Image (cartoon, rainbow, N blue to C red; front, side, top):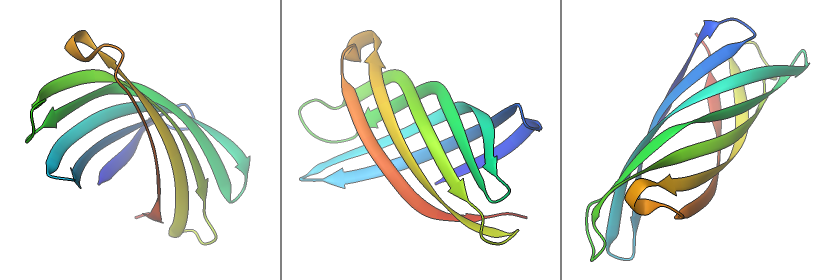
Length: 115
């Protein structure tokens, strides 16, 4: 789940998001803040390049604990109507501090709702 807002039109968008991952007896809660630069590709499509801090907490398992890192993301957004659209967002994460060198990669696809 994420929320995005625009403090400076056509220059900066900020996304604050959180995730909950469950797999094979492990659970991880994470969050990030991405600072994104938007690029208008056409009247109905947009590309954003983002970077920002991320934090994760492994809640179960032998390697439970908190990790910090940096997240890098690309957002491709398509708006077939003015209020409803969809997006594709690949993301790469790199651990810092005690989790230095830990890498993650992922992607998300979803619906956008504007109001």
